[in-house]
Length: 419
Image 1: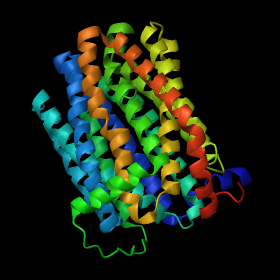
Image 2 (image 1 turned 90 degrees about the horizontal axis):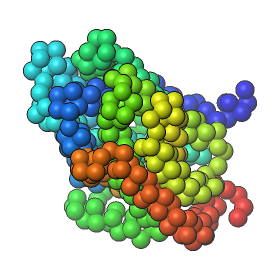
Image 3 (image 1 turned 180 degrees about the vertical axis):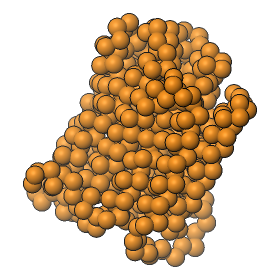
């Protein structure tokens, strides 16, 4: 019990506990909506290119708007921003539900609503990431809070697609959208119940563009952060876009339907959830750099093996490995960055993290969708896997210099007490 208590220390903070419970339900609804949207697009069009286009339009605003979200996170009240963002998300989800129930949902409206959801995410992600440190009562619990945050996202990724696949087959896609709408209401209630001490906002005369420039210069010149984000960008473009091609493998390779798609997504979620749980039981950030170096290679190998598989259980296993390695890299990157950056630049740095992790996905979706249209989904995943392995090798060569810079910072802020 002591070990478990130690490794759930972030939940001792009341605000973080409310956030954790609310987001668990909200993220489950989000992944249900995601799987239902992909299924409807493929059902309506049977097109790999349009699957890639849908992913591009839903994620592109995150890339374009996340830096502005980071500026807002550093200048405005993050708690109030999050409440407003959730309210707008609820409106979008209700609109999607109504259009589906009234049989007015077409490919055009699906793409428009996906784009609007991406716009919202562009502001939500950096604000939510920067708000984590305000919810916990002790800075030393930050690592655990980030790991638990990854756990809830990937627990939802496990439950959401599996449940969504079953609901699509039995009740239709509209049931997923309705549940997602209700989950937004719950997370807003959780946010309103928080007792947040107003964060002192620095008086800043610089305009938005100047603030963006400062954040970009800080991020680029901070070598460990720069290398982490470059590797994350490569993996997002060439590796993580495999999710958008899953309907093709579910139907054409494994000869299944929406349930098969749900199981493949859930297998990826299982691996991701295990990775997040593993991180939550780590007592230190020391050693995460090595994990970041290895994970892209593991992801690359799993994608190549998945692309060659025609056996359902083996495909599920490779999806679990892919989910494990990708989230282990992303969550480890998040943890190191949040640990070493300056507080007054946290929002902007996390906006560049959002651009690298989620903002690059639209380009990956567009590239893989186009490649799959030209050379087939199987060959596309092989190309992506090779690129991930190459990125892993390059980062590993920079690891000694990376550790040389980061360890003194850990010592200075009290994360480690000896070097």
